[in-house]
Image (cartoon, rainbow, N blue to C red; front, top):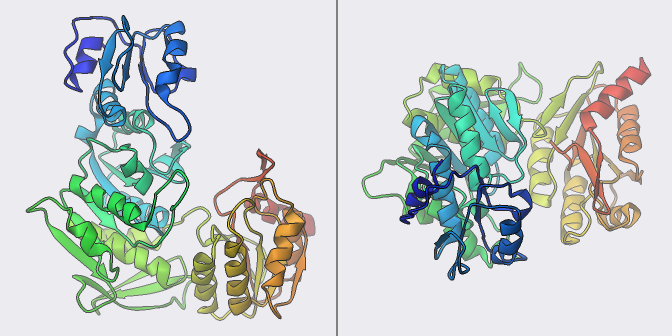
Length: 479
């Protein structure tokens, strides 16, 4: 693409007709002929890397003023916003051929995105999905994602791949950081969905306080043609206030004032660890996930699907077969007990998954969990208290110890378990084997904390580790 055409996307007139071979924002990835956008990061300023980029043969530079003398390119007040517009131009605006659906909230984005993907597929649409677990076309994984919402270059490149593959719809998890860092700047969403908001991602390089966190979430709705929100969440009015004038707004929830209202959530007697969601005393959906929190995500997905005109039969079919890796995921096992893997890694998520399992009245709940190192110790206490409230036995083990000793982390957890029977086995594989060997008829073994992650991080090194593979190994060895 000609440099003049590319820079015109940010309102810069350029007489140079140099051919731009790549769009880059990391000087380490510069190739000859690239356009380098120098941005400010959490720990450094991209301007400091301009000399390195020039040595590597960049065609031009975009940066904050002043642009170094004799360097082709442009100076802009907001390089992040410029990068998003440049990426859209470089990849020929793939979003124009797509119906983009944005999902935001503190909890439940990944599960809800999977539900929407499956509903749209049931309705006959070839659908892409971008989020925490990666980028997918249908059920096929296209790539991993370094962030829940990718940076503009990776995002537009992924959207182009989805367009080329024939996708008509894309479901995206949009994080507060994505809004703060303008990763989705310039995109228009056909519909935006708000799930919930609670204090999180506050401090460090993320958000200064809850008010900033909420404002970043709310900003997404300025880019939405339709907005659907959780009427039960007190933060929904702040989101709705940002919706463009005249854009349709509707709500879902369990309360009287919701437009799409859930009447009941009960265990499905015909499917283990599944739920029945009754909406408006008319429609009942079977969801292969336990608990009210998963039913709430299904309610959100159903409400948004209705605004898009998706038939109820497709909503029912999509919800009935949803499977989210690492989220209340049942691992098939030749045993009279059930094994699940879940990403729960704080007190609130422990309460959610363990209380949901308890609703199905297992004989016992056996838990295997640890806690992340170099994280607030209060999180360990809260997880332990939740386990003590709902579980019958705990095997404490490694999660991602990072720079801490596993034994020290487990000791902190054990100190808050009270009278809950437990043991400490630092090696996670051995801990899982131990829990499975203790399980009997009617029990549930809950492997908590790792979820979709397939590694254990220790001293800045990620060692490959798959809980699913460990479970399969256990039953293979036991045969």
